[in-house]
Length: 311
Image (cartoon, rainbow, N blue to C red):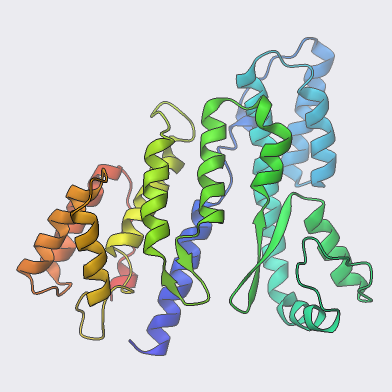
């Protein structure tokens, strides 16, 4: 595989993973939340306005904390918390765009000031006010800086959000956040090596099955997208990272499939059938193999086909 194709696939994987970690339902903005008095409904409207306008996360958080004392049910409290998290993810997207211009600056500052962790180390000693202000905004927005290889990215600090608000959340909101946090702690993709981590993928698929979300939930679509992504990472429907230069599935990948097929995971039969299809086609990823995967992925009820990655 030439360098150009490898880089294209690498960035496709980043986009796929980033897409999974987008906003939550965002359904607060179109939902009525009942408070104990009419005057408190004004706070609700202000809260929605803050979120739409992308106000400072701390300002949004202050309004949320007041509202949580005024609503009665855990369902309504979850809707309000969903609003804050939606705002945090929107802020993450915005700051990640700005971070593109600061990549070299952070690398320089990291070395000059011997910073080991931008999320914990003292940043007051940094004499670049622009960077210092940027880093403070990240810290004040439930966000973290993560280094992947030589690149810096901003991710949502799900753990801190759950630490403060988990007791107010309903089951479904807890579940989808646990799924997102699990991907952060056990990433399915190794950015340094630019390859998938099969052990993490297997564990993450098991974790999904242990934290199921009902079809009636506003978070079900995200749940099924995670499942489809892990299947895709494992089987290679939309990427070529499991193939050699001749389009043949690599030996180490086959060994992973064989191990799964001989295990008792809920997805073992799917992998076993896929392994049989590969054997019938001499382990070459051809039209027959692609058709099998297209049929298999129909059960996820979403279109995950990114045909450009298979060219």
